[in-house]
Length: 160
Image (cartoon, rainbow, N blue to C red; front, top):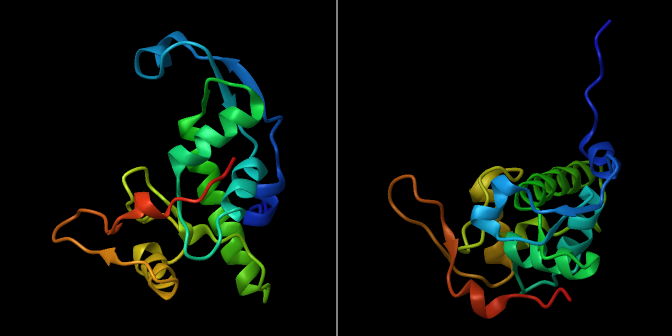
């Protein structure tokens, strides 16, 4: 008997017992300092991604900071925030393929340095196309360097 793979929408809706606020581990404290870290639920990340209007952008760090404020933590979990942004992106694409129009605008979520996310549905080309449609300038580079949005810092949405 073959086990059916969970849909992206089902993965997004599966909280896995999160959110949780926990002490920053000793292993992580060298990079992130001391205090507490919120490990968000996938829907938490999706909620902040949905808040970004056309013409505006956000980064993973902006979402992490908003999560930390929302849950009274020192930081938002860097690993889970990245993973859950990808789940939100794929769930949105899955919904779009099913005919939904009102989906999470995942293409507006960038890496912390303004780079596009090659793991989002359709890779950087699809994300670049969507961003250009909203008036952003996407800079492409030679080699393996990821494209980035020009002056992305000036276009960040206020999440909290």
